[in-house]
Image (tube, rainbow, N blue to C red; front, side):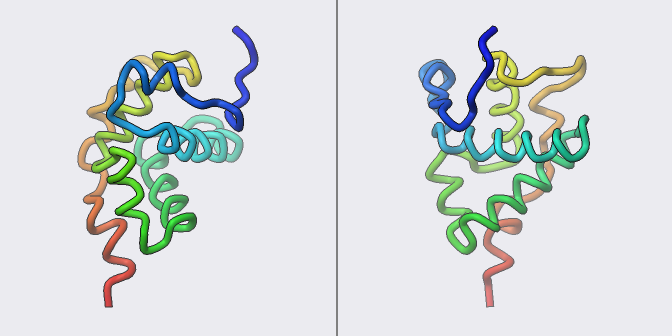
Length: 119
């Protein structure tokens, strides 16, 4: 397999197969994964979701919830589905037992992305 260049990756193959999520959502998730794997090596769903929330809030601030929902990412289960799509496209590895359900109920998106900015 060719070396992947995530900075140039358009994720067209994934979005053609599963159009629920915008390619920019995959770019954000891969950025999160690259950071986590560089720092920790192996991570679980909880760590991925925490960093996904932090990175999104850092990048998009009060617009985080709007941006994510426009990209089709409306709950932590969607992050799990995107992880499976990345795995099926051979961009990331997957360990036995990794499932989208492992990301279920991580946190409520409205609470996570809107509450920090409510007065």
